[in-house]
Amino acid sequence: MELTTRTLPQRKRIALVAHDHRKQALLSWVEDNNELLSQHKLYATGTTGNLIQRATGLEVNSMLSGPMGGDQQVGAMIAEGKLDMLIFFWDPLNAVPHDPDVKALLRLATLWDIPVANNRSTADLLVSSPLFSQEVTVTIPDYQRYLQARLK
Ligand SMILES: O=C(CO)COP(=O)(O)O
Image 1 (cartoon, protein in one colour):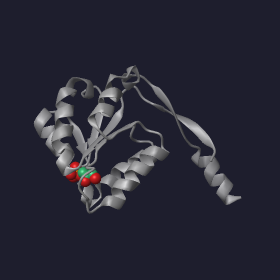
Image 2 (cartoon, protein in one colour):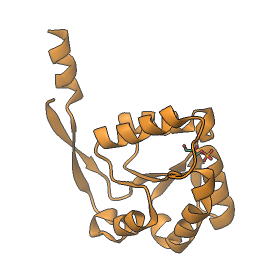
Image 3 (spheres, protein in one colour):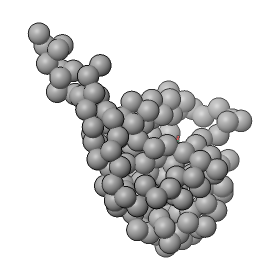
């Protein structure tokens, strides 16, 4: 796979997602980091985003609810380079009906090399990094070369 780079902007487009048993943990984390997060642009799956907006007053662009396609919408935005970070508190103790969508979202976040936090300690490390509010260069698949090679 040929690679290229992409620059994540200073003001990051951050997706916030939590499964039901992890929503309180994510809400607490967002409340504790309200000031920092308000300097970035927030996206979320449907229920998570509405709960965050209601509890914190932060502006959140909410997709569909996860089981209704929200994970897929977030994944598509990552593939298109329209999101720069994913905070996804997924539930390690309970199955969800849309497990394939969850796997697909995590897969795309890995493929497109955006920073991902799946728990509070990693989320804390991400927001305390100086890079959180700076441009960051990441390494991504070179899609044009990928396509050209397949069309030969
Ligand atoms: O199911 C989710 C992530 O997989 C989250 O969806 P909601 O934010 O709508 O609960």
